[in-house]
Amino acid sequence: MKVHADLCVIPLGAGVSVGQYVAECQRVLRDSGLTHQLHAYGTNIEGDWDEVMAAIKQCHERVHALGAPRISTTLKLGTRTDRAQSLQDKIDSVKSKLDQ
Amino acid sequence: MKVHADLCVIPLGAGVSVGQYVAECQRVLRDSGLTHQLHAYGTNIEGDWDEVMAAIKQCHERVHALGAPRISTTLKLGTRTDRAQSLQDKIDSVKSKLDQ
Amino acid sequence: MKVHADLCVIPLGAGVSVGQYVAECQRVLRDSGLTHQLHAYGTNIEGDWDEVMAAIKQCHERVHALGAPRISTTLKLGTRTDRAQSLQDKIDSVKSKLDQ
Amino acid sequence: MKVHADLCVIPLGAGVSVGQYVAECQRVLRDSGLTHQLHAYGTNIEGDWDEVMAAIKQCHERVHALGAPRISTTLKLGTRTDRAQSLQDKIDSVKSKLDQ
Image (cartoon, rainbow over all chains, first blue to last red; front, side, top):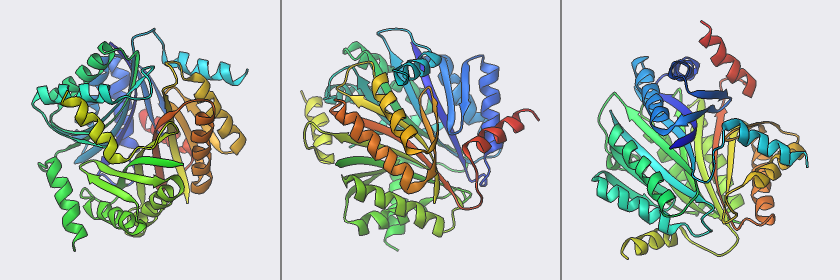
C-alpha cells in the first residue's frame, strides 16, 4: 500500500527554536531514500506505507535522542486504491485546473 | 516507545455519510485490545507505537475493503521520555488546573 | 454557517508540561458559551463559524499572555450543508452502527 | 497577530477527485492577496490572523457552493511573539542546519 504523508514534528520542552530537530528529521528522510519535500509547515513524504511509518518512528526516536523530552506530531496520511498518483501529480492536477 | 494517538479517518469517494467506515475502524481498535476512546472528531488511542501503527494501517485496509477508493487521515502522535502518562492522566491534569 | 471543530493548542518554549495552557483555553471556551468537550488530545467545539473562530483566536492570545512565546495549533473544521448534526449525533451514529 | 497556516480542505460526498475544489481554494487565496504556497498535501498561508481566517471561511463557502455537501478541513496555525519570521525563513533555517 502506497501512502502520501505530510509530517510535522513539534518538540516540546526543547525551547522555542526547533529548527535543529526538524533538520534531524530531514536527515532521517534523506537516509531513508523516500521521496520527500520540505515545506514551511511540514514535509511531504511518498512511499510504501511500512517504509514511511518506519521513517516517522525513527524521527521520533532521533528527536528524543537529541534531547526533546516530549513530541507532538501532526501527520496526514493519504491512500487510494483507484489509481497511482505521485506527490507531483497532485500539484500538477491543481495547477492545470487553475489555468482553465 | 508508548504513544498517544488521535485518529480521524476520512473516506473520499464514498458518499457524504461516513459513519459505517468510522464504525469499522472502531471494530479494528476493539479487536486490537488497545485502550481507545471515541470522540466526536476522532478517536484517542494509547499503546505501544508498533501496535498502534499496525491498527491504523488495518483501519486503512478495512475502509478500502469496504469500498472507499480514497482515504485522507489526520493523525496526532504524542510521545514523551520524561514520564509515563495515560490518556486519562492528561484529562485529569487539565481538569484539576481548571478547579484551581 | 455552523462548524464542528477539534482544537489542539501546543505551546512551544513553555516547558514540557502544558496543562496550565490547555486549562486556560478551557476557560476561554467556557466563557464563550460554546458547546465543547475536552478529550485527551484536544477539545471538540460546536457553534457558529465566527464565534468558534473568535474563541480560538482568544485561546492563542491568552496562551501567549500566559508566557508561551510560540504556539502550534492543530485544528479540524467540519461543515456540512446537507443537514444539521450535533457533536453528540456523530458519536451516536457511530455507536448505533457498532451495535448492528 | 501574524499567523502561519497550513490548510488542507477535504470535500466529502463530492467524488474521489477533488482537484477542482482545491483549485477553487487557490483562487480564493490568490484573490485575497495573502502570501501562500501550494504543496502536495495542503497550502501554506502567511498573514494577519483575521485576513487568513476570512480566506479560510471563504474557501469553505466556495467549496460548498461548487457542490460539496460536506467538508473536513485540517488546519495548522503557528503564532509567535518572540520575533517575526516568514514562511521562507522557516525553510531557510532548516536548510542551513542541514548543511552544517
